[in-house]
Image (cartoon, rainbow over all chains, first blue to last red; front, side):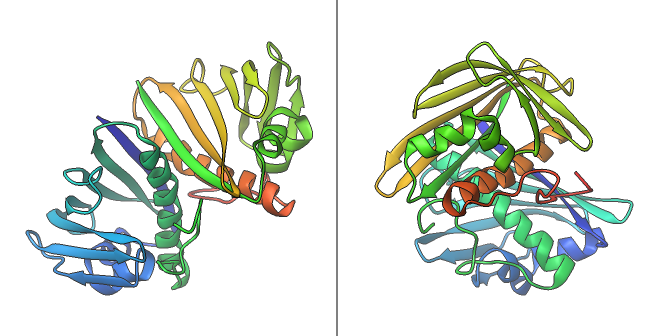
Length: 147
Length: 147
């Protein structure tokens, strides 16, 4: 098992502000993909769609302003069964976001790609909360091919 | 042991162009940090310095247009002894860069930070080769505090 790990600091933001963009359809659509639907309640499934495909995430855990956990229930084979954790905490003027996409079976090339792509989406989330403008698909940062 | 893995595709570039910015002081200074000195020959040590500190990397392996490996011989405690691999290959109009920073003892918070920061530096390398302009320190993308 191998994991993708990241960390960003969102300036002049509270954990609640970050939690809100992880637990509302409008918030998620503001940094990850315009085409976000479904239920963000615990036990619900959020459907994220991108031009090349998408992911369905079951919301496994939510602790207000502290933690969100999703489990991938549909999408690319390498993603199904993996989990995505978001841990939030205040540190001075910043909210620190600790991110983990855990449970990859193998460190395949697609995992390398997703690691870099997640970093750009975390920067999109940071920008959304700091400035009101993120870079969700299809206006996302491209790290390789049209991706 | 845990690893940081990334992948970018550099558009309209040959593996040799990417290899050159990994194996020359001017090239490295163009995407990672202005303050780069030392020897890029195998067995040599490259000194990368940033406002908060730096890293000394021994050049362990170089295969022209294919692969570069460094070993961290001085720097933050968590980095010393880790290795950094760059694998290059042509894929259509792109050069694919597979990156691994391997051998971290523990997935500490600093590793999460470095994972995200490496992604921004890989995007800087991509930009340098594609456009002639990178974002090396001290003009680097900030992912958290002044970092």
